[in-house]
Length: 407
Image (tube, rainbow, N blue to C red; front, side, top):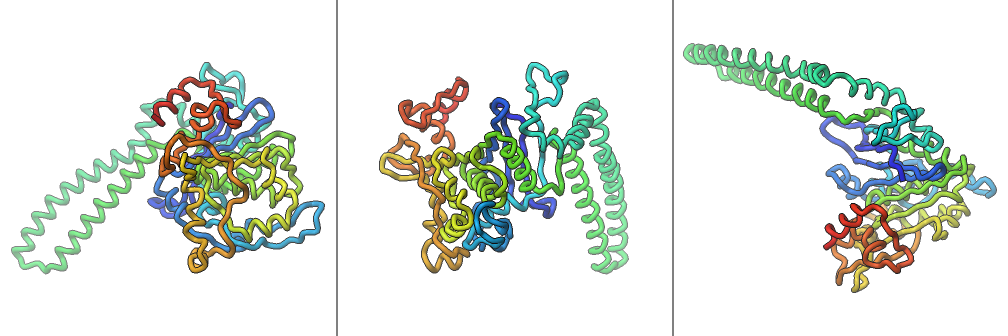
């Protein structure tokens, strides 16, 4: 596989110091006809905010409210049931993030470390972000001293402001001392103090913005492009061209990958999904039984996709005492009681769309270790070489890393 793009830190438009959600993924290709989208799991406080949100009626977002299969009698109506609010928003509402291209468009620019982009698979990304990426590359190609001078101009101004501020402070102290001797009121002193504090706070904010600008990632900063639109276009174009598309992820990433698969299968009936594959590792529940029942009734091909073990694989670790990865069932164990369902916004029972494929965990009990990605990888490579899911990693560094991490 050749990793060609990364999309990092996609979040909702909000206050500068607050980020709702933090969606990350890498996009890779294999050969000339395979596209892979791999979503990252929980890695930040914003991700935790995504995880702890509850369920909401699927009609609330309007994401799943289009016509059914081309050859069915389904009408244009919203599905019933409930869906996880945090995962859905981390997929459909994030509009700001960083895009970084890790391959070269032309062979002339490929060096000993670079690779040539598979334009036929990722053309939509090039069309969307080529102008922004070229602008960023020109910025990165500028001499380092010039970039430092530009980003430091604000800091120079701040330094001058601080000198002036210190001079003002000393003179103010003299004035305050003199005015105190002249019985100046407390209100006047408080007004002067507030002015000095406001200047200092504004100076700190300006320095912080300058530092953030200087430390910006090399990639393109996108504002206003919805991640759901980017991914929909990328996946549907690839499938319509006869290519294979693999969606995968761990933990929260598995949930977002699942939503992307559901979105394509249900909302784009003209797009063939015979070459759409979903691989999840330790993924939590994303919807309830009423949602899946109404979706199957609306779309026959959706039900076929969920039942096809060649296209939909849900991996779950299981220890010697039959204990499973606790994250995969945390929502159902918390909200499947009648009172909790009402509080959590759940209409049916929280369930998975398919039965699990168990990955052996070499431990007596599962615990928190059963959710670690390295144990999923080790379970299908080192510990059980004769297992039907066994994988031989050709990269020796990967094998050594797994052995060291899981000893």
